[in-house]
Image 1 (spheres, rainbow, N blue to C red):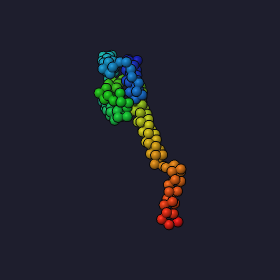
Image 2 (image 1 turned 90 degrees about the horizontal axis):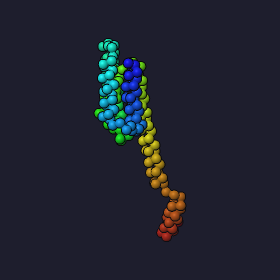
Image 3 (image 1 turned 135 degrees about the vertical axis):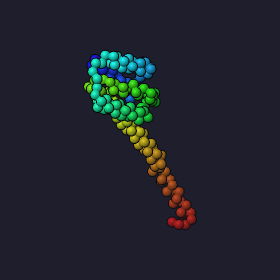
Image 4 (image 1 turned 30 degrees about the horizontal axis):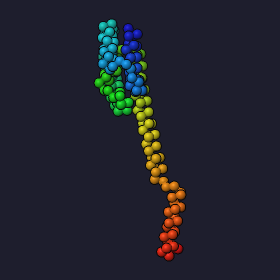
Length: 163
């Protein structure tokens, strides 16, 4: 049973990492959702233990927090991976699987999305800095331009008798 939980959690975590890194797998999203549903059905059929109410509430809160995190990080994802309908299947193992794969899943989702936001902000900061440098370089005149302008100004002053 633990092996099934680990496989399901690994599949979901690999999909999160693939979405964050922009790595595409040949299986379409619908196929991935079907595989996730098969893991969920197998877990429900084969699971013999039940969870207490407190554990179910904690898992539900963590599930909704992870879903919110993934949804809020969608604008930072590569353009090809801005699909939001798959989020529930990515975070579903948190509701069902054993505690150890759940902790690993939570760490992978939070870590990969934190890295995504950090890299996006760092990339935007570098782009903004390079844009500012280009703007400053365009506005800064070359010293040779100043010498010709200075010579013209002095010639104009001499012509009007100011020097």
